Image (tube, rainbow, N blue to C red):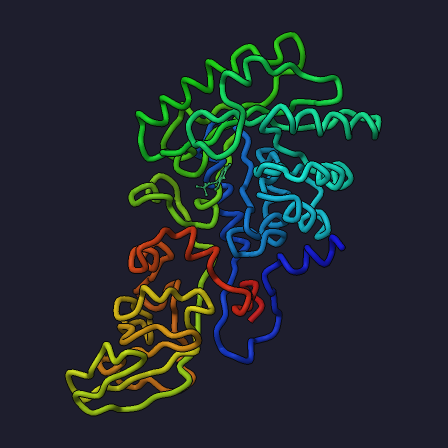
Length: 386
Ligand SMILES: Cc1ncc(COP(=O)(O)O)c(C=O)c1O
C-alpha cells in the first residue's frame, strides 16, 4: 500500500521526449547550487532543512533530495507535509532525517511514522501522548519536534500549553519550532521571535538541548533573528525569491523550466474572434499559433489575455481565453515561426526570461501556487536527459 501512495504522489518523470510536446525540465544541479549559495550566506552553525512538501513544490522531491544529500555537513534533513510524502521519500531510498511538518491525524499514522523512521511534529498534548504510547509499545523513545504557535494560527501548542508541557521518557524532543506568518515584515517577525524565545527558553535544560527553528525562505535571507540553529527554506531553493529584491542577496538559479511547441499555425483576418467567449478579436491581419497547454496543465486561466510566452526569444501575447488544453498566441510580430517551434512558458530563451513570479503576478497568485500547480499531465524531464 505505501508504495501505491508513493507512486500517486510522485510527479511523472520521463526520460523520453514527450509525445504531446509540453514538458517541464528540472535541473537538480540548480537546486544544489541554491543550497550551496544559501549555506555560504548563513553562519556556519546554521543547518538547512530543504522543504520538499508537495513533491518538492512540484519538481520531484526525491530527485532534489538526492542532489543535496552529499553536499557537506550543512544539510540537516528534509521537511515534508505528510506521512505519505515522508514514505515516498523513504521508498525512493532517502536515508536522511525527514520531519513531517503537518499535524498528524489520525494518530494511528504514528505507527507508519515510527516504522519508516520519520520524525513527527507534536502539536498538542494529545498528539504527544499518542506518540509516547506507540513508542512505549515499540520499546524505543520516539524522536519528535514540538511546534509552538506564535502567531501563524494553523497548528502548534499555544505558548501557555507549551509552558505546562512536560516531556515523557518515551519522547525524544529533538527540536522545537514555530512558523512565521509575515516573514516580509520585520516587526511581525520580531514579535513572533520574541514570543518563541520566551516560550522555548530553558526547555531541555540539563538534558540535551533541542534544535530551535523558525525561518522559511524569506526569513533565511532577510531576518537573522530567526536563523537560530536551523532554517527551513522551500521556495528559494527552487530558485525563486520569496519577494522582489530578495533574489539579489544570493545567486539563485531557477530549477524548473516549462516548455511546449507550436502545434498549429494560421493567419486570421482583421476582426476575427478567437477562443471561448470571443473575448479577443484581431485588430489587424494576424498570425496565430496554437500551443498544447492549458489550465489542466496548470497554465492559469487568469492568464487569458494577460500572459506572454517566448518564441524565438521574443515575448508573444496570449490572446483570448486560456482553455483546458490549449492556448493561442499572437506571433504576428515574430515572422518565421513554424509548427514545431519551441516555446518557453517559464524559463529563458535568448535574452528574455519569464519567471514563475511573473506568471504568478499575471494570474493574481503567488509563485508557490504556479509551481505546485503544474499538473501530473506535464512530464518532468531531468535537465540533461533530452
Ligand atoms: C512549516 C514550514 N516551514 C517552512 C516552509 C517553507 O516555506 P518557503 O517556501 O516560504 O521557504 C513551509 C512552507 O510552506 C512550512 O509550512
